[in-house]
Length: 184
Image (cartoon, rainbow, N blue to C red; front, side, top):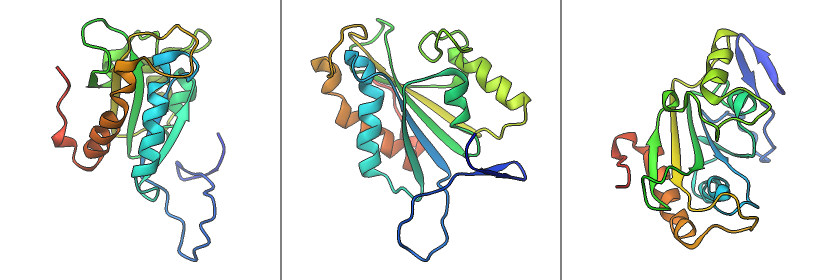
């Protein structure tokens, strides 16, 4: 883990803004997951890029990751709130549908874990047991994918069409969590 740890709080170095104001760490982390060369699998990354342009960096740290498991959970340490955005393929919703989930729903997820790490829920529990300070509020947003296997640096048309609206809806959720409604 990079940064300075003091009394259980980790402080990450922040880039200089040229300001003489003290540096304040965002209390919310937004993490887009995916692989942007595997068609719809990159949608979490694309939405994170849109959110980085919309959100106040003093309040929201926006990151892009291509890994899950313990490496993902380590990125959550020290934040009060966290949002994770990723593609999913359930076949129960139309491609591009956006839904919100809780960590408990991913007890045995293959998507939020790699073959070389433990699954997401187990990683959360492990970090908690080791004394890691994890967000008290964690939301996972899933975008229904049509194709996560084709090597192509763009999403399928129905998933690409949802990127702007998904970013807008997640930004609205970050400001007012009670406003959230899943797509049908």
